[in-house]
Image (cartoon, rainbow, N blue to C red; front, side):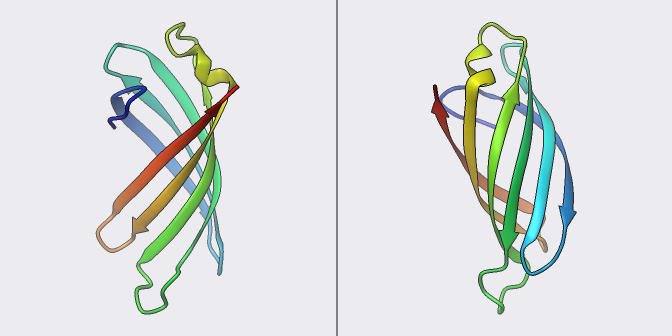
Amino acid sequence: MRGAALQGQVRWSIFEVEGPICETSIAGVISTDNGATLEFETRGYSIVPDPNQPQVWDMLAVVRFRTESPVYDWLNTTLARWEGTFDTRSGVHTYQTYYHQR
């Protein structure tokens, strides 16, 4: 992952409850390029907006972060909005994350 505030590698797992609106929880770890470890957890929902493309899901979630890194401790009081798409056929996830810092 690459962004203005941090860069690194992401490992994650997903839990879903499927239905017309899919409930999604994703938990993972970001190992930053400068050696920090950031844990994150999401709670969100997804839908298929176009019945003619049932493999493409629109996804929205709220993200919470946890870290002991002094460089990124500002994330401990930050909530983020994660939105984008997931293509179940190709396995490609495309997201943007926006955060609000206290």
